[in-house]
Image: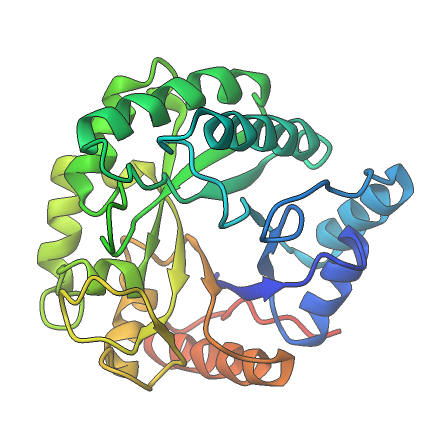
Length: 288
C-alpha cells in the first residue's frame, strides 16, 4: 500500500494535522517540531496526542515524520550554535516519545570551513548524546544537495557519520529526490544504479523515508531548490519511477514541493492514481 503525504503545519497540534491529512487524501505526513527558525516548542497536550493516535489508528495514517528546524547546525564552528542544536534535538526526541514508532529527520549540518572530517565528528558526538534518550523513535540523516559546506552530500559521507557514531546502527536515512539529483545522483536516467550504490554504501534496509520533490536545477548543481512535481529538471515520469520501484514502494513518501494544501491534494491524487495504474491494488489514498 502506497504511503503518500506532504509537509503540514503543526500550529493546530497533532490531531489537527491528522485531520488535515485525511482531508487531502494523505496517509502519512511530515511536520516541524517547532518554528522552523528555532525557538521553544509548545507543551505537549496529552488529550491532543490521544486523539491523534486514535485518528491515525482508525485511518491507517503513519508512520509520520518530525523534521528538525532548518536553523540547527550540529557541526557549527560556534560552540553556542552546536549546544543550541544539541539541546533542541534532545528536547525534540524526548517529545517524540509521546508518539512512539515514528521518525525524526534532520539535516546533518554545515562544517563552515572546519572540514568534513571535523563536521562528521561533531555530528556523531551530538547524535551519541541525543539518540539513546529516544528508544521508540528512528532518527534519520537526510541526503543533502551539497551546497556550501553541507555534510551529507554523498552516500559515503552519511556512511561515515553512521560509522563514527556509537549509536550509528540505530540510525536511518531519508532520501530527498531533489537533493540527490542536485548532488549528482542521476535518478532520472539511472535510478537502478543509484539504488544499487545506496545499497552498497549504506544498505537499503537503512532507508526509511523519501522526500518526493522536483528540482529547479540541473543534475549536480548543488543548489537545493525544490520544484512541483512535473516542473523543473526532474520529470514526472522519473519521480513516478521512484515511487513505484519495488525496493522503495513500502516507504512513506512526503512531498516538500512549493504548494498550498490544494496543490498538495492534487499531487497526492496524481501520485496515488499513477501508483494504482502501474502497481495495481490499493494506492493507500484515504477519504475523510
